[in-house]
Image (cartoon, rainbow, N blue to C red; front, side, top):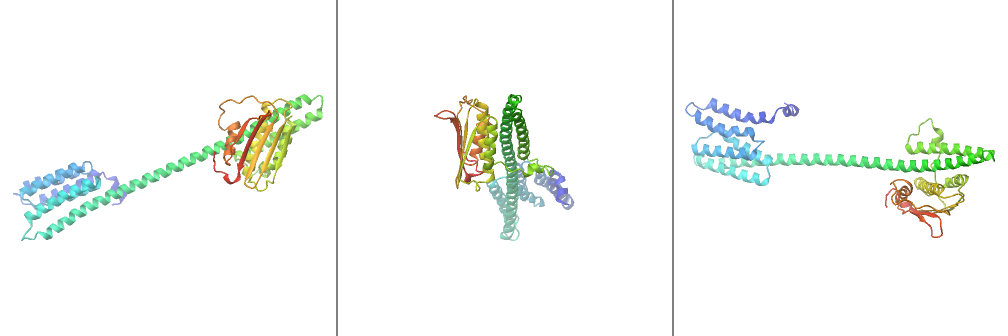
Length: 384
């Protein structure tokens, strides 16, 4: 019978096999005059084994009591093997202390049995044989208990690993959602702000200077296309039928000049200064610099009056990139608590990913400033 078929049989059925066999043996082999006593003692020894898995200690005590009654009655029965089965069950389901105590009790029974029933003074041989059986039953039970505990520990470890993998997957999803949220916020907020400013300028200039209105509308169209391209890339849904989006590079330090020109076209004159070469700066770090400058200029465009000027300074060195964006306009106070992942909190998250601490606030000489320094060796560490 295979293990699968065996597992389908209830344990109570398996535990009933030995008692039934022992009773059949007594009924078929003992003479009629000895049958009542032998049957009663065998039943007392064997029948408790049916419940040995549910109450191993209680069953062991019942079997020991029956075995002692058998010894007092001076009747030798094959049912005495029930003591070894009960001992095995105790060892398999209880701790070391219970196992040692049960083994000592059964060993005492073996000593009493050899003292009474050893023939021709041959005490040592049967005692050694019975002692070996006691040790074997106890060791087998301990091995079963140890194996069961090991399998349980392995299963628990596998469950913990599976739970850990699920948690890591959830963290990865959360981080990816946060990244997409930051990207969408920066892309949508900036481009919509630029498009609104350009639309206002086009409406204002449509009668006085149609050429300027036309140029503003064309720039609105280009800004919208750029926003769609950035959104497709950030969402990871580029397809083979979108070659323009695939060819378009990730925005970086080289695109800051175009960003400054775009802001100037909306009515925010922006000065740009880049110190040091940026060829060694990783593309992801350059994207972070671009998004920081973009978000800072977008905030300036939204929160300052006409006539405000902005200045962008990017300092590239071998191990870091410094970013400073300042403007000359007054700025209303920001609320005490901003939604996490938007605006300045989002900028702080981007800077923290490169070990930088972003500072944003009013300048002593007037205006508003945003400053941070990205450590190129800390990419992806997430240090705050």
